[in-house]
Image (cartoon, rainbow, N blue to C red; front, top):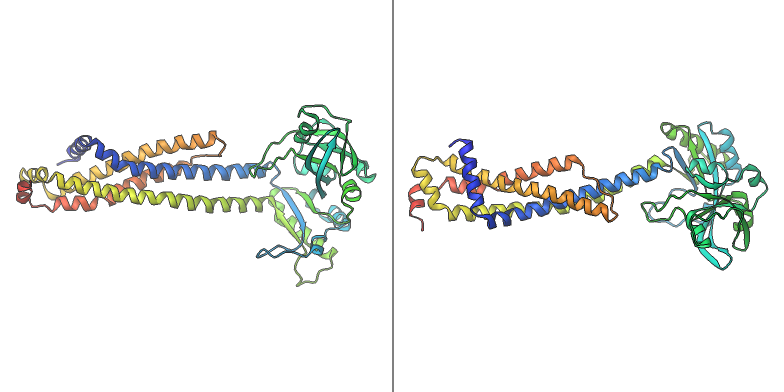
Length: 406
């Protein structure tokens, strides 16, 4: 029998047993849809994380006090106070690959205006911070170096703070005075909204003030919580890290074999770490979903074995009129592959639909084309592999015994 005739026979057999065919394909449909959906959510999450981190600048470096933590060891408080004013000045003057630097001091608590109050965090920075973290002022203006030098009690506020204190996120509160830990701050600018990031943090629940004001009036500390730096280009990030490391080690008078008492992280490194973590999670989810394809393959084999038994007389009749064993084998292999591929195509469509639903309810999802190609190929392979046993059983039947079968 030629391939065309085999296909016709296979299609006729499949359509004559619609219920059994549906049950056979159900496992494949669910398995493929699960794999496609998991891949889409995983890829969408990685893409979303990369975009979120890119908004903060791909050439960003962050310097934090204390050596890199390993094994969850709690650091001594003194180890978290290693970044001082001389370090800031040395990096600003000596680091040729750094274009902007802002020391950072933070303080969390209640901010009050009249009878309204809300919890927020005040970030003590210098004017370079706006460029480094890509902040835009919607109304008003930023504080300047003179405000930093004079410890001016001025600040920039995010949209969430404006809404909580004034009842309207678009309210023009320029010139209003708010209080944070009993210290009055005059609002001179309103930040353009950024919304929530991928980790559920409200980026607009923020107040930015001169770092000298936060250090002396709020925190009463002489050390910095961190440094935010901007490198000339992303490609120079590694060289910039080496340069800043050398400057800080010299400032801290660390011996050659001594461990750094600070940690430097690049935005690219954070992006790679987050992407690697998401890839691991995605792989686990896909492997779990792929097991259903294995179960579906076993189900197809069982259904095909039942089909061979039920069609024993048909097989004997075909053999008696000249059909060879390999023709019978091909017939059942084609049926198995067609059932598997049909289920795969429906599963791919369902996977796209579930991905769209996931995206519509807030989960980032992006179906990679290669996952569709791989799913289709796996379905064909499952049909072939799990169809071999039934096809072999059918091909080995004795035509006379098959004709006698009741």
